[in-house]
Length: 119
Ligand SMILES: [Zn+2]
Image (cartoon, rainbow, N blue to C red; front, side, top):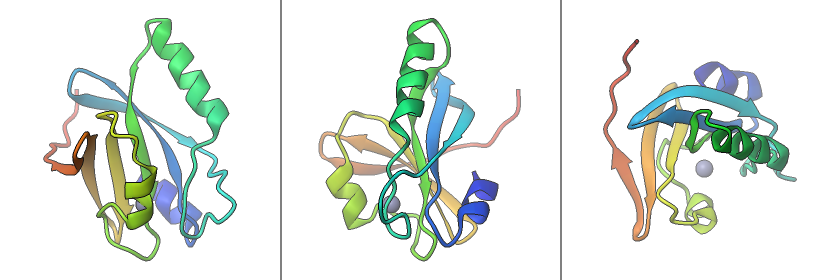
């Protein structure tokens, strides 16, 4: 995700997080189809459809989304809060060489703690 963020800079990169249980085990980088990708992101809808289809066929679960903030911090922006659907998905935000994970809960974003492991 860090390399996707670097490659997209100064535009926002975005993509899909896949996994199972409480673990994110895969990442799909997608096109940012938003008309102003400098400050917004919109995941390629076809990639989302494909991920949902793969999940239904018994593949990895669609755990959430990631995107970068080329000039901001790793906290959800006002735009992110407006876009949030409160569906409990995980949002990873990459900024300034770091990354934070959030859950999009009914009452707003909450920071998640995480470990980077290998298996
Ligand atoms: Zn954002």
